[in-house]
Amino acid sequence: MKRCSNEHLFLYLQDSSHCILDEQYLHFLWRSKRIPFHQLSLSNGNSFQLISEGKYNAFESGPDFSCAQIKLDGIHWVGNVEVHVRSSDWYAHGHHRDPAYNNVILHVVLFHDREIVVNGMTIPTLELKSVIDFDHLQKHKIRANSALPCTGLIQTHRNLPFFDLVQPTLKTRLKRKSISAFSSSSDIMQHFYSLIARSFGSKVNDLPFEVLANQIPWRVLVNLDSNERFVAILSASGLYPRISLEIYANESVPIDTYWWKRKGQFAASQPEKRLAQFAAFVSFLPNDLSFVDLSAKEIVKYVSDLLQQSFIQFGLSHHIKKSFILNNLLINAIAPLLVHFNRVTTASAIIQSLDSENNYITRQFRAMGVNARHAGESQMLIEVYTQLCTAKKCLNCAVGIHLLNP
Image (cartoon, rainbow, N blue to C red; front, side, top):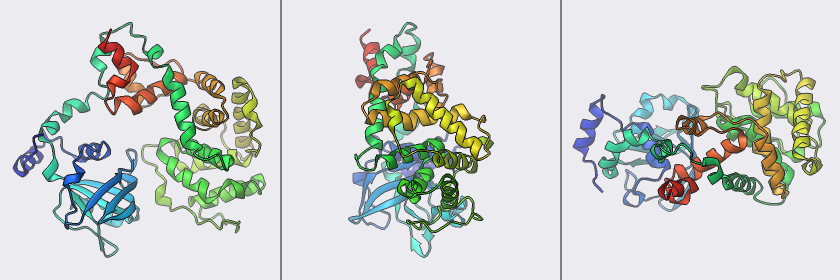
């Protein structure tokens, strides 16, 4: 593997017309673990070991990776990781003035040109300049423009039975998400409540919503009336500081406001609005899960009616983006719950009755002629993309095998 010399890197970075080694490329190297970590130690000489790269923050300001796990000189750390081309970018980007960066446990940089000090402590730094693969770097721009490895082949196979080939991935996805959500059989209602919270948060704010569900757990809410539930959730969010919080059993501390992400969100998706909608829905959520025994059509109506009733009760605009909220709930909360109760067929039927999702992944497939007709098919595309395409596991994919053996 050909490595890039410092001279090559500096010349490459100075030529802005061709430079592709930016933070996004370094993010890719980190999250795909395309770095020989065993060859690296911290800038101060201490040992480094990666356990988990963390959750990538692709949507908002704040540290690039959250909940990463590393070992520094044998000590296990969990926290945020920030990535820069140069260490000094920390100050150039104003992170020293943003409390969201106070719990960064590792600074990953191409060039270490300055020590970073936060609250009197020097942040551990991992420098990558000695392990950059120059050949891979030169090919990066071409690779970056091809998110799906089989794009060219699929476009030449107009009659490819794509969704017939990937049909099993829908049940695989449903079961995988259910197992992940209900990792233990105890306290099923709390797990379900957390799924509902993440559904209202969507991709951007799912983490703070989940933290909120832990701050005000279901065992506390179940003993409150609807108005008390509504106030308790709003108070614990940290977004409504003027709302007084009664002292409940958990004596929860409000979430720090910087957890909530706003960038790129439409007015209807701002955290305050989603939070009020979540609080209203949960305020009417019963402790009885007997609805799982209903038919697919009946469950959709049950959730839709509950959503509308709760929004009307608290004076919310129940028609704005209602279908988006309903679909999120059905796909990301109701379906995993049904699978947990071995109602896989019902869960599949519900998802296949919903409109196709429109996101970055489905648009990538649509660009090469693969159009999802309903949410069942869009969920197949998401599963194929996240579990196979991004890892380039073409030989584990039914479509890849079909294209290689037509």
